[in-house]
Length: 426
Ligand code: FAD
Ligand code: NDP
Image 1 (cartoon, rainbow, N blue to C red):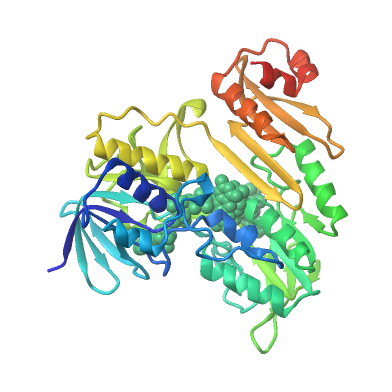
Image 2: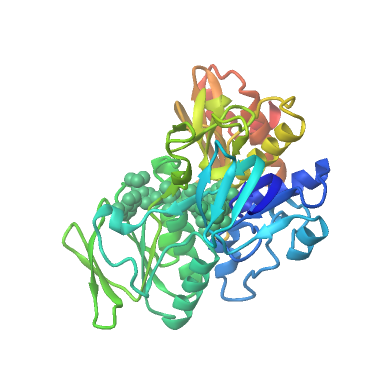
């Protein structure tokens, strides 16, 4: 026999924290909600791990960044969960789920049953082994997904201060970690297969600004190639990174950020999957009506894309979690999740925000020499996406609002001339 709960959240990351807060706002009774997480601590704001957590001076440490401080809401400490009668089952990996019987089996052998399940299992970092390269388990190779990874990276940076760091991957992790490594006085080389960094979002012009900025901070770029192997010494430490183009880079620390895979495996064959995630409707409800999915693991309908997609960003995790709880508590009377995609990053003294979809024709505007600049994407005669670096709070709000309104754009040259002024006056 195991325990039974009305609501169970599987996973204890960002989405779980925001779902818990929403449950309490809408009024649940003590003992109704249980959160099961493999991580040993209650939900925290994962974005802090590649930013404040890695600072050499006054770094962010728990409990300061438990959810939901990232959205200027209450900070949910262990005490908070206790006071609200929410059961936290931490350090416990769920081994199997039976959605027909509505039960989960934990690593310690306990069976937990639910009436409604919210899947918030997030994603795992892709390993180099999945691309045929061995050596991921070397003590100076680091991925960055959870607190344990972040602690390892901090220790590595301390132990080889002033040494060489090689960053594999030119996406979010690569860009944010490269900046943090530089701030920790390491000599950094970034290696990635594309022609420019952040290839899925940035235009070549935008990427070129950030790459030049990184170069001015000492970062070197090796583009258009990937690693083929590591040189590993007799202590099991990586000493060099060998690239497919035949060159080799000395390495004291290697940070790998080559993408993620959503944690869906417990549900394969039980729920409908789509685009690598768990397919849900506008209420975040899966193909089984008692099971909802939120955050990185959910493939949900996104209006601006005109199709269902998975998003791997914190704002989407927070809002999809809250929407699912609303739908559950209102017994599905809630409306459809109408989400405007929002991505952002902060590195060095820079800060950008993006809203919508980066599809169609692109128009750049502003001062690309270090001031405020940005880009609009126009598809079928309407604004569908906006990017802004170095904006004020009001300017970011303006591009968000304009993108949501999807105003008609007849003349791209005129849009370019108006620049940020277009969004501000929409
Ligand atoms: P997660 O937060 O990953 O949580 C998943 C949880 O499920 C984890 O606790 C995990 O241990 C648990 N779990 C998984 N499987 C099981 C199981 N079988 N049993 C028990 N528990 C399980 N996004 C932004 O928009 N801006 C940023 O600046 C930003 N920075 C980031 C920095 C880093 C270092 C990382 C890794 C991500 C960042 N992101 C950022 C992305 C953002 O953090 C994610 O989109 C968000 O965390 C997704 O929330 P989630 O709850 O779906 O998954
Ligand atoms: P991304 O998908 O952002 O980037 C992965 C990068 O690695 C791409 O440049 C990719 O190239 C490259 N790559 C893929 N395979 C290889 C390979 N074999 N060798 C070298 N490079 C390779 O993933 P990240 O790992 O950077 O980020 C992980 C997750 O964390 C994402 O969900 C991201 O959204 C999230 N995150 C978000 C942040 C934010 O929003 N500010 C900050 C930090 C993390 P290609 O495109 O060709 O595959």
